Length: 292
Length: 299
Image (cartoon, rainbow over all chains, first blue to last red):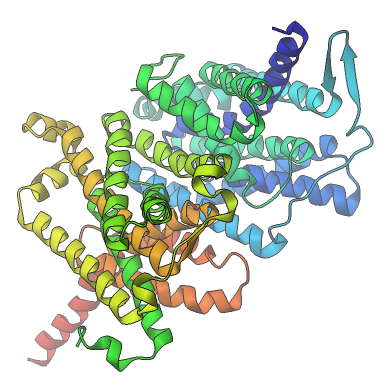
């Protein structure tokens, strides 16, 4: 076996895993804190990607700078979605929560098709084609930067959840919302903030997506399938599991892309196959958690 | 009247009717599974399996379309058993996630093995019954009557209690001696059978199928929006929901070239937030009381 190509595809897998983690973190946060699997998460990412694309196309703002703007825009969109829709069904059976977020997802997918057609759009920056050579392996500069930003986003989220007051409130609510309410945490406001933060993460992840992939109305849907797979691998709703799941998916896709004939075409199907394998061997997720 | 219908309308309207009946079959079969509290977001997978099995069997061995449609339904049931046994013992969300990934994965697999599946170019079959729309109408009507009959049987039998108990509270159902997984898999099998039949019928009636269409998210979403709009867990709900959705869709298709399914999203959101029992529920709760009050007032 050729060690250089093995190392190279491992490195590529880890880089893409960073992006997948950024894509999934918001989904994990909402599931962990609110107990909802947000089927519209992918569409929030899609909106983030489009806002980054338009900021670049119209105002010439570099996507890596507009990342924060996409995050802020989506933070408010997310809070709006929570206030007008999800807030009303927090106590409903899970079936209603699933259908509502699915409805929101379909709405935004089609809104994007109406507003921006189905064209695939790309962002070409001055550094798009550049790469970094490290002896036997080399990295695309854009991919490396998106990976580093994903790491920063993850670290920021962890710090937010462990060091700040609203972050700790979220952790308390995720453990037990009745007890949290009893000790004086405003549970509704915590949900609102959690959904907003998750949407902001989706916005930032969307900006990253716009630099390394095509931006089109269904991009969020495609990514949310990967995110669901990561969620199941990691055991629903915890951050270490999400990071672990992202690594598994990213590296598997990369190896299949390198070693299987026409492998890159199969990449899309890998998340499903991984999902089935996990469900057969350990449905509680490889990282194992308290949730069934 | 329903029997002489083809003699009364023109060919285009007959085509619309056939498409609507086909959608009713999909809506009713989604509702059968929903009675156990499970949300399938991947009916397109079963629909596509039915469509492709039937079309490919015709292409390979010239199997008669009627037998092909049946074969497609059986293969769809087999797929449902596989997915069902893996996911239906877990919380509902695993099932929903797996079904949505299943349909998407099939589309990928279909594109990657074009030698067997025809790839992106799809598969063509000769027109059903030599293009005789009247006969096609009677076939789709027969399937529709069958699915409604099965739903009626379920409602009248003990299955209804098992399904409802599982939907309301799985743990309690388990204590009552109902094996939730077994009944959920059974419901999914029935649902898959009719969805597969619908797929097979579609492939021959349409004479042409491509993976992007039969495995698409649009199909899966249509399957669930129609019964939810009409009213879940009823015989009439999916029927009424389908008629209205088809009418809205025909109108919007003319207005928007892209994204006319935005209506599906809006309807889902509105129904979940404001009319949880769909149109049937709205009728029972809001409209009927108006009339009964009036009668009391007048009398």
